[in-house]
Structure formats: C-alpha cells, structure tokens
Length: 525
Ligand code: ME8
Image 1 (cartoon, rainbow, N blue to C red):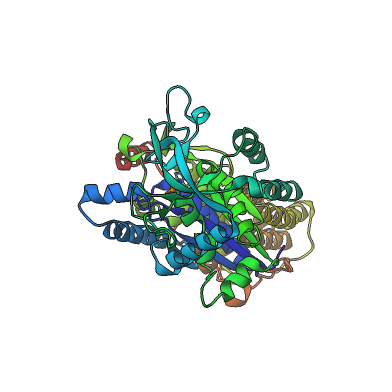
Image 2 (image 1 turned 60 degrees about the vertical axis):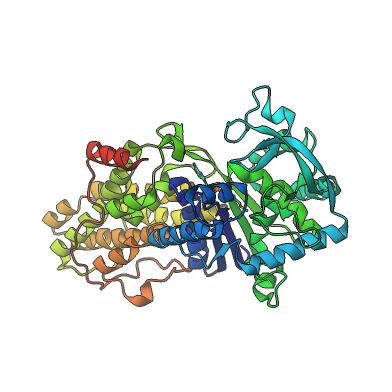
C-alpha cells in the first residue's frame, strides 16, 4: 500500500441538481477516502463541478439568469448535499474559479507549443446535451447519440485538435504495463474494442459557437472545449501551474501517492484515453487507476429529469438517516456493475442488514451483558471450539476486508463483514447463553459475551467508513473509551473487558416495505 492516496470523483455538471447516481459515485469515493485515512494513509479527496459549456449556457438563458448565477446556485446545492451525506472531501473545485481557468489556459499553451494541438476544421455529428461529437459509425443510421440516445445534428466549425496518435503508443504501453490501470479489468477490452481498435480520431478541444468557457489566449474567439477544461481539474485543484505547487508535488507527482479516479461508465473513455495523453503531453505522471463504476437506473428506467424519474438523496436522508442511504448504495450494488434502484430493494436492504443482522446483534448482546453481568463486559478465559471459530473468523474478516478495500472492491468488503455479523448471530444460537446461565457455567458465559463484544466492535470499525454516524452510537452503547476507538493495526483480541454497556434505542428501526415503497415513489420526480 502506498503511503499517500489521492481520490477524485468526476466533477459534475451543475446543469441540474444532483440525483442518487451522483450521490452513489461520491459516496463510494468517500468510503475509500475514509478507509484510507482509517488505515493511516495520508489522503486527499477531491470533488467539484464542471461549469462550462453550451448546455449550461442554454439552461441559464432559459432560466433568465447569467451562466455564472446559474452555476453558483447549483454548485451550492451540490455542496449542501455533500455536507448532508457526510462527504469528507478535502476540496471542492469549480471550473469557473480563477485557480482553474488561468492554469487551463497555460495547459493549452503548453500543449500547443509542444505541437500537440493544431487548428483545423471539425465536421461531425454533434450531441448538444452530451456536448460530444460522434462519428458516422457511432451514431448509426438513426443518427442517435450512443450515450443518451437523443438525435444528433451535423456540425462544422473551425476548431483546435489534439493529436491523439502522437501519444497512442505511450498509452498502450502504459495499459500493458499496468494491468490494474483500468478497473474492473474487463472494462479495458471495452475501451480497446469500442474506441481504440476502430481507429482513434484527433480530439476536438475548442469551440467557437458559444462563449461560456475558458478563452484561448492565442485565439480569443475560441473557448476550450469541455473535456480539456474538465479533466484538468484533477491537477489544477492541487495547484499545478500555480505559485504554490506543494500539494501537486505531494499528491500527484510523488510516486508514493496512489492516484485513483472514480468515474461512471458514461465518461470512462475520456479518463482512460484522452486524460493520460494530455498528461503525457504535459510530461506528468499518469494516474494509477481509473475505476469505472456502473450506472444506476430507477425501477428499470434510465434516470432522467425530463422523464420525471429522478430520486434525490435529501428526502431519503431526512427519513432514513444518512447511514441507511450510504449503506444501501455501498452494499446493494456491486461496485463496477450497473444496478437497479427500487424502493423495495432499499427498504429490504435496510431491514435485513441493518435492522435485523447488525442492529439485532447489538441489541441482544447489550441486553445479555446487562442481564448476566450488570452491564460490565467480562474478561475472556479459556476458549471452546465455538469461541475459537468466531474469534478466527473475526481475524480473517479483517484481512479479507482490507484486501478487498485495497482493491477498491467495496461491496465485497462489506459482504465479508456481513458474513461475520451473521456468524456472530449464529454463535449466540449455537452457544445458547441462556442455557449457560441456567447451568451456572459462568466462565463459558463470560467468553460468549466478550467474544461477541469483540466481533461487534471490530465489525463496527470496519463499517465505519460507510456508517459514519452509527459508529459513535455503538461506541456509546458499549462505553468504548477514547483509547480503544482508533483502528487497531495489531488487532488485539478482546481488549474490551470492564467497559460499561448501556441499553439505547435501536440503531435502525424496522421499515414497513409497502409504506416506504409508496414514500420513495412519491418523491421520485
Ligand atoms: O459527465 N448512476 O458530469 P455529469 C450512477 N462533467 N452514477 C451516475 C448516474 C447514474 N444514473 N448518473 C450520473 C460529467 N452518475 C462531466 C464529468 S469529469 C472530468 C467531467 C455519475 O454531471 C457517474 O459518476 O454528467 C457519472 O460518470 C457522472 O455522475 C457524470 O456526471
């Protein structure tokens, strides 16, 4: 594991307010950032908004405000949402900020002076909502945008182009030498077959038909076309090209930093093809990994504002609490695959994992410690086979979880903790504390309670990057002192004897699936 970690979300378009899809990606990055910090890795976590382009300009005109006013309002809403979701980003970059625009102009100049960019004429199929030009093959006979499936139109204009062929050999070499550059690994084939093998065109990097963008100094009627502007955020936010490059040197140029971009499948090609080429042109190092996550739909339909089927995370957080929403997103969908959001799945996931398995285990354990030991966690003694198997599983789960998380396999990591919690519930059934108590077998009873507390607290720590509010409630119930709250790298077994537990309200009340389905459907618009 490298000793520093730089993780980024895409910078989202503030053309409309964020929905559960944006929240999904940001939450996954937050979980990884919190996990790395928990492991003592120095971490920098960046998110932000991508504020230029024709679409934003049009939206602002429709709304009767300036583009700047338009993006100010929505960027603020993004920030508020991330606060409500307890996102722990270290910075929030907006591409209209001077720290970004000035440097993007320098980046353009540098690439232009390198001979990487030339002035030409662009002709192609243009999709306005996606701000992308497409080729004949990509739009097919129907002339539909391959991304959003809306109609595209022919467009032609003077434009600057980035020479992709110049850096293609470098990119292919990098991909070959770094098999985990594109994750999940199968996404690499998709990139090769869809974009690289059919022949990569040069990339259009300027536009003249609108002016809401970063002006090109050398030719002011051009603005920099969105992707060169947007992708640069990952380095401008760190101060690249500014008077103070300290953060940039630390979190980008230093090979001891693991750089991870997390992006949706819709924008992976920009990150795995063009971004590394720009970086090569700037003589900068390339990211270690681009993790491509899947897209979520709602009840089987693509989420879209115009169809009125978008779920906003805020009403979910208000009703179920931030941890329930974070848990659902992280656990329900295999990170890297597409997923379907349905209200029923949401309510059942909370019930099964949080109310029944996790909440119930805590509740039962606390009640038994109060009943049998006046609320004081007992000392551990000689272990029997049941005790040993739960102890061993707890140890193994820590290792499995860490391996998965280091490989960005969040849902698998959480599943392994879920298995430990299930085993702990089963351990109660198998060891039958009520019988041990009746028989007066106090030493065995003490072991059961101590091992349960150990498994609960270890599991809670492993889940704490996801369940950001619950962990403190668990600590409070078990009276966990400050010195025992950190991530124990030595995994000391059962250091919790003497803690005083107290009964509290259930962490996650059971939900009525039918009622909650109606509620969630009512807030989807
Ligand atoms: O593409 N399911 O911004 P964007 C899961 N500004 N994730 C989703 C999603 C869904 N249904 N919908 C969106 C842009 N996302 C550019 C990015 S980066 C230099 C510039 C997430 O607002 C997912 O991560 O359209 C996707 O890649 C991203 O939002 C696109 O956000």
